[in-house]
Image (cartoon, rainbow, N blue to C red):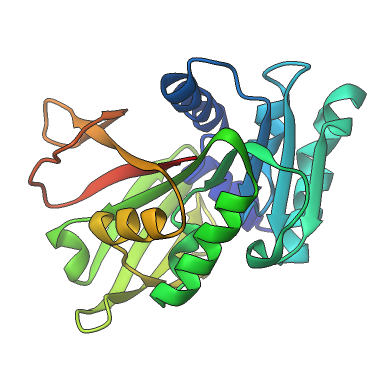
Length: 259
């Protein structure tokens, strides 16, 4: 059987059902009302868009990505599983996120650290400004971020899943430019290891940097949702608004820009 890297990514990295519930919860927390239109940037196979429209008849999704391969994959494997009404409420575009000027959204999101591909503050500011313009009154932009001392060194994280082993490798870290290279490898049970199924050259943006750029882009306020800690000291996957983080080897947080 041919190895399917997008299915492996979905099974090991993504949880679209949890993502859309969190996005909706944050919007409700900020505005006290229900969001309708979601814009998913760097959407890839746009699995989040597909889960979003499943939330209700009032939900509409826009997915943006410049790579035709994952967009085609999403249409074949995810969009095809929706009913006619749900499919009609998803609009995907092969387009650079820096140049979008279509329908405005209640929520704009860039998850899985996808915007880390922007290495300069100038480009990041341009992107945040574009997102700010594309939001409705009361809209929010949600991005995730990670860091901690562990991210300043080479490492390999291994996660064993049913029928699959996932490897997250950090090859290096450049403290002068805050740049790091990462790879995802997969090994199906009984099969060969697929090296560098996904590769990333990322600028490791800090939360203060992201907050400052969002404010400069015109967001009126920036909130941080920090991950809680489990009994064993690891993250528990639950995020709540915080003004001060905890000292830890590695952390994940969501940054929310409010219109």
